[in-house]
Image (tube, rainbow, N blue to C red; front, side, top):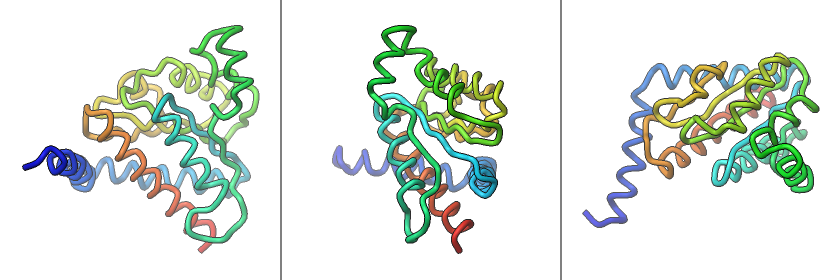
Length: 190
């Protein structure tokens, strides 16, 4: 098997593991329901991540605020890292660890949803954001790798991809994120 084939096979194996895991599939179903309900109730969905996970967060927020399949009204959704002036000011004046927590404190309301993407589940800035979210009755959904890391105990809902390999985890985060976007859109605009 070539190296290219081995990488593709590795990605397929992780997705097959997800497909065969009834607990994980139920968790995906649960986050679809929670997210649909939040939008129906006039709440917003926020995303956060670091590095490649920040790019994935921005991608998924755009699927809600733009469109996925249907020509429909925009849904209130944002990736929290997109305001670079805010991000650099808070990181400089306070610390990088609180960049998301301060935004969650400032812009969210009860019933909003915060989806944090961290392959390790140990990103301090996301953990602090989840802690702040809990104080504000914001629903937290963690997208992590196999163990769930520290986010396992602080997430209301956990999507822990059965892998320890960062690229395989991120590929699955996008797959699950697209499932979320497609089914929520279908629920709201059938």
